Length: 108
Image (tube, rainbow, N blue to C red):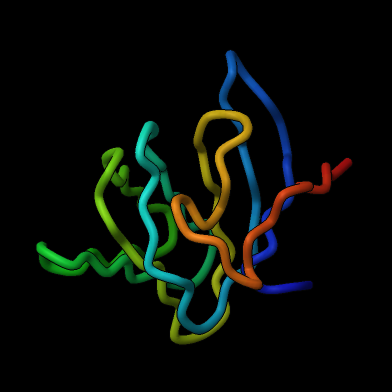
């Protein structure tokens, strides 16, 4: 029920599949060494970029943010998303904030 608090659903070949409920703005961040995939399970997600137009994802759509690209996910109302990234990737990338998750809970 917590927003911006991903849960580990599965691992496959060194990649983590994470589920999260999101609402509001996340932090600007980037992942230096890894691409990040966003898949919208329900609702709508906007991914803002510093140097590119925003991407708006509706239910069933996905986006891969390339490594090193600064971005900020935003959900005007609650959305459920799936994240696919290397195991051990930090949700806030290169920044440390109160939203940084270091110990991801596994869902059963």
